[in-house]
Image (cartoon, rainbow, N blue to C red; front, side, top):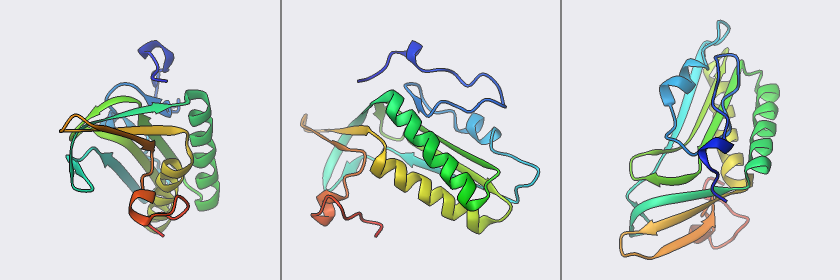
Amino acid sequence: MTPSSSSLPAAADRSAAPPALSDQPLDIPGLLSLAHHPGAGAVVLFSGEVRDSNRGQAVAFLEYEAHIPMAASMIAEILATAKERWSLHTAIAQHRVGRVDIGDTAVVVITASAHRSEAYTANKYIIDRIKHEAPIWKCEHYADGTKEWGNNCNCHAVTGDIHKHIYE
């Protein structure tokens, strides 16, 4: 279910958390500006980009759909867990829905902590959980006109096991 623009709140000010899902291009500089904290010695930004090929096929674009309320709630829970577990000053994640073209950003995760180890570890934890748990579905539209729907994670296409992920 792709939302209309009016169904997604805009980030109103620096103190408000950005929406977890957006049907507009992600504002990486704007999101990064929300991450700075006087107690943070490290800010880590992960940007998931749409590439032009996957598993030997030329990709034309991606399309994402999500169960908006459930995905937003799950992402908020993932961020809260990471903040507590790694004593983060900041944890931000935003994922696109709708059409995302080659070279565009599909997902951003930003973490800020006193030290880089925690910021890196928490950032990886957040993106891995979002990709494998949040109700966000990806359709790859190939250059030959075919398409393939799947979960946000397609590790099973490589590992052969829906419960085994490439990073494991």
